Image (cartoon, rainbow, N blue to C red; front, side):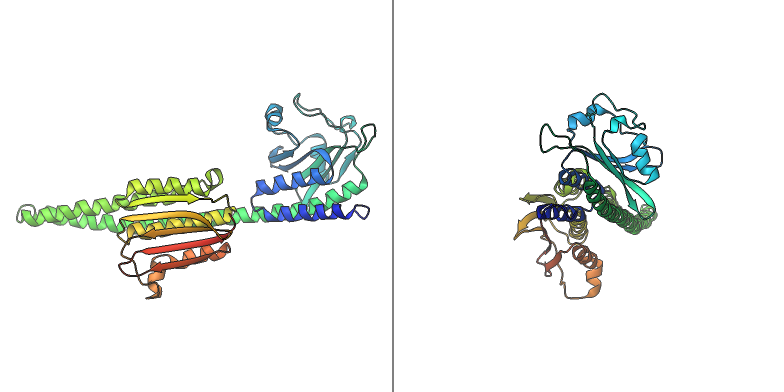
Length: 381
């Protein structure tokens, strides 16, 4: 390390910072592999995260095109030098990987590799991955080169930070899983409470109508009209709950597409008109996208179930380097400062917590008879 120029140190610093910026495991793996290949000037780099069945749960490459990768075929198994790095937990620096007795060949579409540098990624005593590079680029066409002890030292530093980044990413994803589980549990309770009350009222009203049919048909007709109204409300409750319980598909579709789809469903399910627009917003970190989605769902829940709104608009726009989510309705409105109980009833506390949790802020504008506007702003996008 001491022989590398200052620009090399700057590159190492940039690579480590890039690793720390990502929260999704797949993004972390890609950043580690790309950084290692660039810093050590290799043609190929790869990182494998082993599973418990002799294969790899994840395997990320850099320097191989998508077409090549598809032609190579299934993910490699834990064999040969890859297995040695995982099981013996020691670095491997080879002048020509093909001449090593552990080399077992590779598929026909696999690129040809010679010099090789690899080492395990360790989290304490656990081996959580194997990082390796191949084909060190030579500064002169006629020269011979290979990976050096200095290269191995640099890769060891990257591997140490990779272990931290991977561990943090896994903790983040586990936290998201727990949050989703808690959210589904909350929604299940809401569904049970809301629909159970509606169905209980529906049953009592139907029984009352049945008892009145013979002696007071006019009153029985009124009770039956109430039955129809309660049934319609129960259907609305069920439809809205299904929308909220459905997986958000943020990972596959992103925030904009997910919001658009859910709002289209709500627009069909409710008598109120529900509209969505998005202007100039790019992809955001997963935690911010999830928080924005949940706040929009909570605000839409309030507008559609409690405010009597005829029109609700959800807008996602950019403002001063940040992203703004704005949900506006023309419903009955309320006094935000009136009581703490109203804030809890409308989910304002949880919405503010979600905004605070991703470095954003939430503002609420409302007044009785004046509708409501809820706005959440997060940095970036």
